[in-house]
Amino acid sequence: MTDQWLRVAEFPPHTDLTALRESLDRHAIEYRITGEDTARQLWVADAARMEEVMALLKELFRVNTGPVRRPGGHESLADGLRRQFSQAPVMMVCLALSVLGAAIVQWQFGWVHWLTFQDFDLAGPRQIRLGTLEMTLRNGEYWRIVTPIFVHFGIFHLAFNGLWLWEFGRRVEALAGSMHFLLLVLFAGAVSNWSQYVWSGPSLFGGMSGVLYALLGYIWIGNLVAPHPALAIPRGIIAFMLLWLVLCMTGAVGLVMQGDIANAAHVSGLVVGMILGAVFGLLRRQRRL
Image (cartoon, rainbow, N blue to C red; front, top):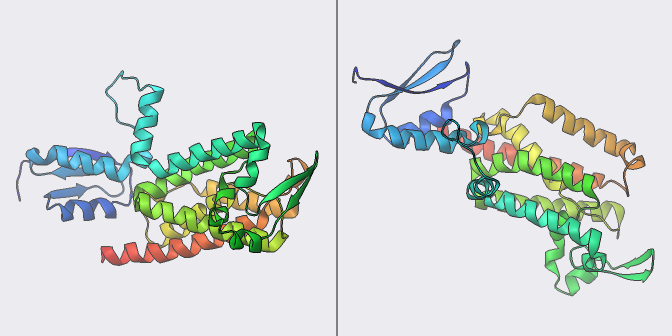
């Protein structure tokens, strides 16, 4: 050990630094962490590895710390979008496709039938004739199993889902990687859409809500099983989302919003996310042992 320790970073008391320790050990970086009930401080022995340590800190804590800028610096909108796309490309693509889906509903409703769970045609000015899942599969239109997640009915629907996709999605993608996050979105989308179809029969439904509840369940249970800074969301957010789920199931929300609420998609998404959060949380915990 050396006596020339350099202080690199400071964290709030009781911060879980397990992932940081693992990363530093994996890169054979000599370090020590002081403090427990007071602010925790990271010290590094080799000044030549400071840049490498800072890169690891940015990688591990970018979800919570936000962008690093020089004092007085200003990040343009374009730079901010590029940065977010580099950190969470799948989340950003899902957000863009959701905006596109909402725009199609608003201005080119006739195109929506390409995105719905089952095809439909317009039987009159205010009447649609829906197909069935069997017809969808027989015609080889397998994309319909997932694409309803991008269909949003109105600005409130889009804004609500977009907000939570941003909040939950970038956390999971930063922790697990883009491919893992993509597979999670596709699987949760397919299960929640299918569950809604089974529950309500042929109907016109859409939205990212089933996936969002899957992400909520994944973060909630995953952080209980294997705590990680990226998954450390306030308990109030979890409580609000669960309360919103219950309110939707009572029908109260449907009275003030256009159309019915896809409750089956919400519940099935939450269950899928909780199961996957437990499974991958256990795998993360095993890797730490």
